[in-house]
Amino acid sequence: MLVTAGTLVCTARGKVKKSEAGVMVGDRVIVSQADHGGVVEEVLPRVNQLTRPYVANVDQAIVVTSVVRPEPNLFLLDRILVQVEHVGLDVVVCVTKIDLAKPSDYRGIGETYTAVGYPVITTSTVTRTGVRTLAGVLRDKTSVFAGPSGAGKSALLNMVQPGHNLVEGDVSRKIGRGRHTTREVRLIQLDTGGFVADTPGFSALDIDFLKPEELAFTFPDIRAAETGCRFAGCMHDAEPGCAVKAAVEEGRVPRVRYENYLRFLAELREAERRQYR
View 1: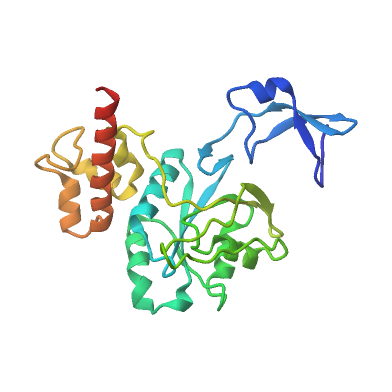
View 2: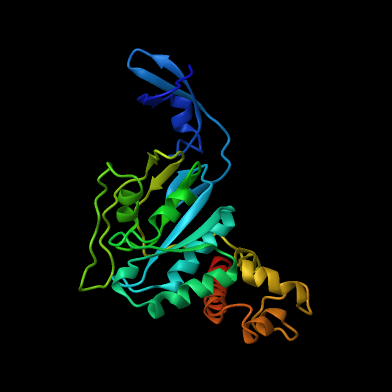
């Protein structure tokens, strides 16, 4: 059955429920008509899928970080980018709450990730700075917002697509992190075309799906610089003739990114050692 407009409430066929892939938000499916609505008969092959948030067939990730409340956490931001790069999504970095800070407080974030090659949008839902630019980026694409709770993801979506009244969180003064206000993943259709997955915020993200030697491929700046390394398979930590370390010293790879890479590398090596004990 072809549904050209509107919403059809469906249940999944037993074989679909029991399949290893299951059904995810964002799936494209084949349905049949039933008395109670519709039945999902088949889930079509996915272009990609994320496990946290649990959503499929995404074009791009809007990775959100706030200037204050909570303070920027580039370690978490890079962890999110590792997962997004592994899946192969386009990335836009969105810096929020700039009305609460001086330009000098957030200029460095923009410079760091622009140097990597990511588009960076600075926004404020109070002054509406950057909201029109963000709306243009979202047009006709399926996008996922990712970032820590309290960074302002729901506030941005309320501004871009009024009428959904998404719950906007505050930040716990005790722990300095946002309270989780988005409880489930859902797709929001935009009037300008496209969809946005409104997803729960998170403050931790496992990257142990990667092998240590795969990590560099999730850092575009390191990936570009490593072509000049003396040794094939260079891990960019202790090897001589490492072009990545030279690029860090020359400012072509942001030092904070390289330091996060080394922390992730140590983490993955430790996970690998535990696996083979």
